Length: 226
Image 1: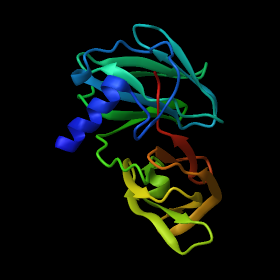
Image 2: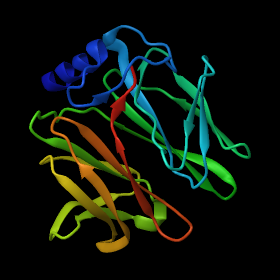
Image 3: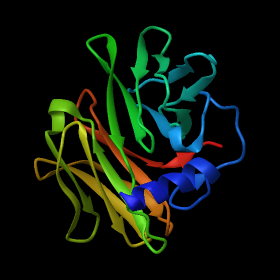
Image 4: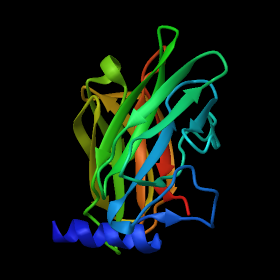
């Protein structure tokens, strides 16, 4: 618990690059409060078409293209709910959630049966290591991959195993060039994904999402908006 409080304070007060990648100042999507009340929320396009996120209150918009489906983590005040909307011009889905201090929430939009639906997964990071990279696998592939994993290409190594649908696993790994392949119920699925050179002290996520044929994966840096 002490480590979590230290970790949260680092992000909420300074939003430095310790453990996360950060960028230059941007227009905030949501109001923020005192550092002790801060949390972080990001938005993911798990569909095969472009989406737009509209934040409640500010009405600020973020494009979630199919080629860049993950937003940054946005700091938010935990006193009061977070609202907004996913939309692709034909379908829309309202966003509503509450977050606790120090939580990092990921909201993923999917298309199903002519509608948009959402899955929300939360974590409280406590695994920072300046010499390692932190990598997570989010299994959001629904019934298409009840138990997901990741294989390292050209090596007999499993990075993740038995990640149940609607959950995530995170681990520390060496900062190396890495290519991975999704497994579903211990069987390789789809094409390899090149992650490039991972950086020490940084955090990353891989998302497994459903498609019409079989689940697919994509990669994102856990970036904090400033």
